[in-house]
Amino acid sequence: MNVVGHKLHQEDRCDDQAAEQLGAERMRQAIQQMLQIRRFEERAAREYASGRISGFCHLYIGQEAVAVGALLATRETDHVITAYRDHGHALVRGCTPRNAMAELFGKVTGCAHGRGGSMHMFAASSGFHGGHGIVGAHIPLATGMGWAARYQGRDDVTLCFFGEGALNQGAFYESLNLASLWKLPVVYVVENNKYAMGTALERASAVTDLWKKAEGFAMEGVLLDGMDVARTFVTVGEAIARARTESRPTFIEARCYRFRGHSMSDPAKYRTPQEVDDFKQVDPIQLCRASLLFKGWASEAEIEAWDEAALEAAADAATFAKDSPQPRLEDVGMYVYSDPMGWRPDEATFPHRRD
Ligand SMILES: Cc1ncc(C[n+]2csc(CCOP(=O)(O)OP(=O)(O)O)c2C)c(N)n1
Image (cartoon, rainbow, N blue to C red; front, side, top):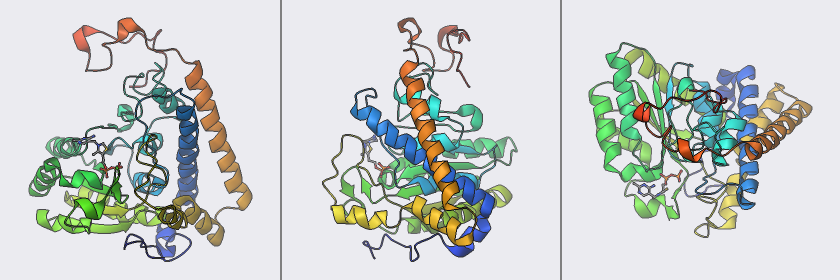
């Protein structure tokens, strides 16, 4: 299969060498995290359809290997920032199914106290800095976070994820130029899922080999099969090492695919069912599953049990979210800006506060 040069994958499992580098324990962890994201979002889609979740909701289904593989390569002290398709990154990096689902429901027990919703998940104490709705606007923030680390002499690295739709925003060029010029420890990952809303990459961008743009910043540019969690771990791990030890940024193009529409309200008529089916042949969870079985690192029964546990956690999260209180009208100014007008969180009212 060759889907307009997008598919790099040749096998029906993850790359063997990369899988060895990922190792059995991490690969077992990877599939559990991917299953948790998948089942969480399938549940979120159902809750959205039933009207319990409102506003925007962009699902990450199909792209799980990018967040999971990349974040497995980080240290706890590293920083992560992403765009609005953020449920996966959030769940791997400090949010729980409960407080992420409650956030989708707009409840006070949500990870952003119900103020952010789907696009603005946060777990600042775990180094997860959102969830940003304006395309490309968080890329300068990542560059600033890299600058702060260098200035303060910390050896932590910032990982910045964004969609390919952000690549023709000025902020992208300004940020990567400065990161290269100032040698900042930032890894920029474009999750190229082929479409920005309904616009195919080749209809919007003169350059479609996005990783080549790195050359314009005198930066390392790498092409990655983002459907393969093991390769993602290895490639992002190398970029993190370069950032941590040499303080050099990297730009990675992770080619991936979203199986659902842009958001819950998108019927995705700009692509054929055949194309979606083709990409489902390289479903990141199935590739990882096949590797685990091939290498004898997990049994069918174990994977089944992990899937069951993920389903249960998603169901439990939905019940928790449904039963949680709404934010109080008199607290409407809280958690929007940092400590506005001296308001302090009240532990009795916000028992689930994390940050
Ligand atoms: C500055 C700005 N312009 C337009 C929009 C509307 N918008 C929301 S999502 C989107 C497409 C972005 O696609 P991409 O960056 O590829 O991310 P993906 O949805 O594929 O994850 C657009 C244009 C926005 N949020 N911000």
